[in-house]
Image 1 (tube, helix red, strand yellow):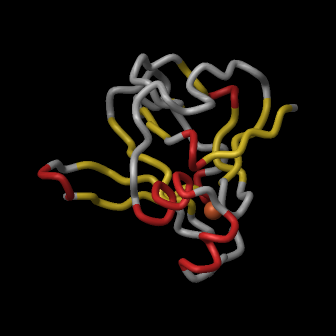
Image 2 (cartoon, protein in one colour):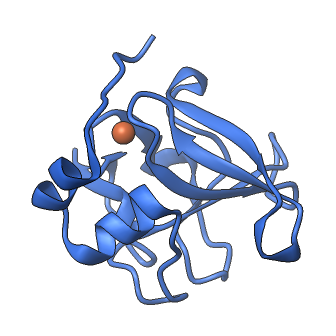
Length: 131
Ligand code: FE
């Protein structure tokens, strides 16, 4: 189980850029195709930008064409939490970092096999560790 990380907004603001703060702590969304990892094809681990938890692997990244880094499975099921999100007049499933609660993006059921899931994730919520 991931260790829980709890910080105030003021503390997060000191550690994150304004965009990273808005997305991870205030459930924002970066513009499609604007993030630094959309076209990243290097091998490695995508960690939580806020707390460093291992969230996604390059092995499960795929080309969704959506404009956001997309994965068909988390690195460890225990590290990514999901919650119902009914904001913006839509019914969606939000993906969050289980250890620090960072907003990552959303999960859709139109992904590739074997899971059929598409974790649509903001680059700003991730920090890539090249293998
Ligand atoms: Fe985190």
